[in-house]
Length: 265
Picture (cartoon, rainbow, N blue to C red):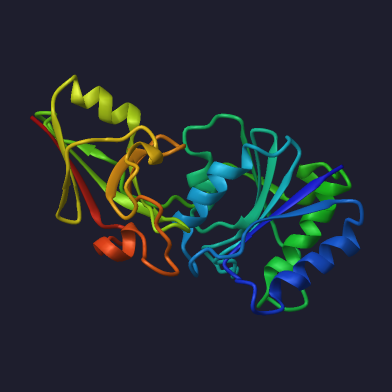
């Protein structure tokens, strides 16, 4: 059984997702097609990376991952196939391959040009054909031309001040519950803290306690911070609901790329 996953910014209102799935079932009739997400913010590569990086590793090796975000082929943005950690990724060279493979050694990159009938929907008319060839176990060097590098993308990494009294991070993702997830990891926090007291600032809101579990606070609607299941520092509202009372993002006015500051005392 081969698994093909889809990560796109198509949403589910239009025909796009259904068309891609139909093409894949025609080309790969025995494949299992899994939706990772179709609600990526339009053209948002960092959000694509966050969702795909934290999900693909839970699939079996040999899985094929189609990335339908910012896919138009240009002179500087080619279409690539990447083999990484036993998985295959198909998409445009918009920085996503750099983010997924950064600091990895078992990476192989291939450029391909399938000459589709229309250049306006490569996820449907190009990427599904590449997935079919992988599905049929065509050697990768027969699918594309090996290349050494992909386009890199700059993004903000947490910074520790020279005196190690501050960590400066940003919000990298707002999830379904309105939780504001930062790029400050538990390991970086503890390595810098060295047992000291701390104050965490999310958009002018101050926190001096980090909870271990959501239920530990046991007070509906109360603000809290904790390290989430990915060990990233996160600001939350206990039992939030973005459809009614709101979540940390809406209630506290926190948005992606907002600064997060940790001060140690």
